[in-house]
Amino acid sequence: MRGFYVGAVDGRIGERTRAAIRRYQQEANLPVDGQVTPALAQRLREDTATRAR
Image (cartoon, rainbow, N blue to C red; front, side, top):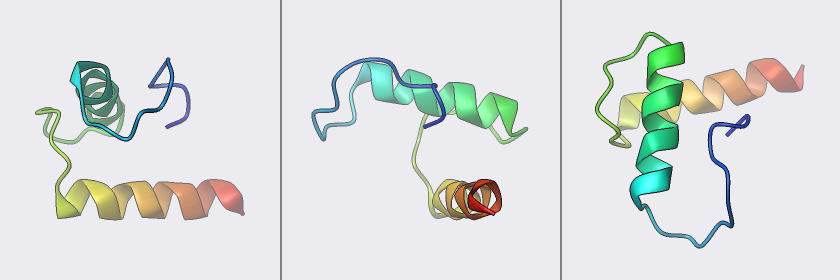
């Protein structure tokens, strides 16, 4: 996630993952709760598509 997460990826949503989600939410001016919601997933898809162009 663009440098928000540091460490090995283990496929689990742990504290480091939630911290990375919170940092992204804060940068994206979204409600900061560390939760993966449909709105967050959509925003990530949009951001990824925009950066790929």
